[in-house]
Length: 546
Ligand SMILES: *Cc1c(COP(=O)(O)O)cnc(C)c1O
Image (tube, rainbow, N blue to C red; front, side, top):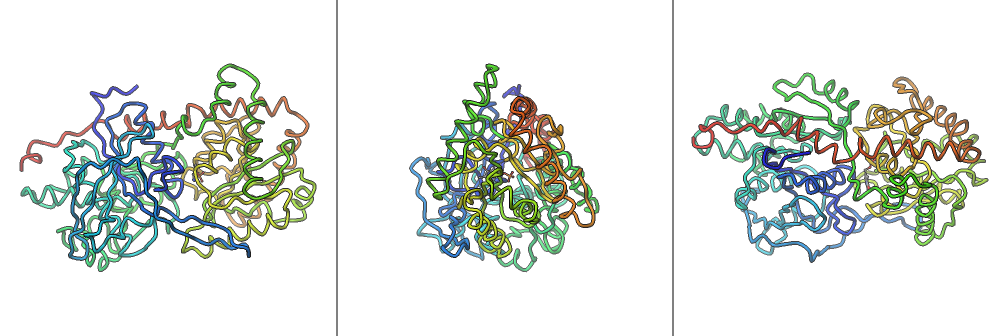
């Protein structure tokens, strides 16, 4: 366990936090991870605070129109549980001062979360904290200035002392630019200020997909004010030209990590040519048990009682919710496969439909039922086509395929405890980790997945779940993985479900054995403390007083 007095004091920066479905300041996996991080830090009583933005409209509410297309709506949310710290800080955006109020959120058993909010009548640039991932280019940079530069200023104004600054994803990299500026203001050279900043910063990289690593033109950075007193030459040394937020994170940190072991290998390969980058280790993600582990399943597991009964309870709850939301009536006795993901091409949501000759009869007979959910980014037409395609499948097979619109934590919770099988088929090695499968595994839902993300660490084929595709990477990966999926589904999953309940129950138990500790955020936090946060590097006296 972690000793509070010895543990360094951490400030954790993230663009989004998924603490609860009612608090809509998250979009997906990154936010859920950050929310679970704060909850486990709270459970372990770690001296950690979170820094984020108060998104007034949050991420999109994405509904499906009559013609089967997703469309986006935004509402203004007000939360009565925010505590006003009375602290406000200023950042400079396009030459104008922008005031950021600082709110405190601590109602979810989480370590304190401080949220900056620009939505004030006095601000010309009030919109900055309106929509999570709502803009690109300069708009996004403005949000990153508030998070990074404003975040450091908020810590100072709140009087919170910090030993380690954790940038969770490159969005927070401008915090490093502020840490450098502070030191230069005290008289240090850029060189020395950068060096000392590096001793205080750790960085987590998230996506192995190149497009997911945001970069900006220097003209945009400079126009909007992200240089924060630094020069083009200095900023280029940190993030390159164009300025890549991940590269900046790696060069501003003393240590960095990827979020699963395979992702560590991929990330080290991906960034090996970046000079001056922090070494990248791997700390596999985990999920917060208090949030994601169904108490009924947990109790039955811990008491060695029958798992089927609580499983069926959760399954029937899911089926009732599906009926209430869509009108579709699924069959509780038939195999139910869940799939909920952001609509991104490499995740291949529609893979299972690609050979109707194999799958159609199983769907028509109801032997296999599928429940999907997921959002596309509002500006991503390709992603919206993926959603439309899933909706079309639900309309084609109304008795056995459903699509739940507006994926959120509530749907995530229902699905990862109420399905029988959790399907995941990313094109390896593009999934950094994935965490929904961990939630499922803990609840005795058997994972059926390609060996990407976290699954190589959890899979014992035919024991804790199933893999398909044998980690193949090469030509016609889709065709290869599709055939492998059908083979495992038809020869192993379906027969076990319908003909060997005893084995299914053994696998459910093995899945929980495998996951409940190893893929918990409690284990994850302990690794962050021992591998990334510690040893706390005290700033030399010179740095504190220079
Ligand atoms: C757990 C969760 C995620 C992340 O799961 P992945 O496996 O990474 O897709 C995303 N969104 C919601 C609502 C979740 O509950």
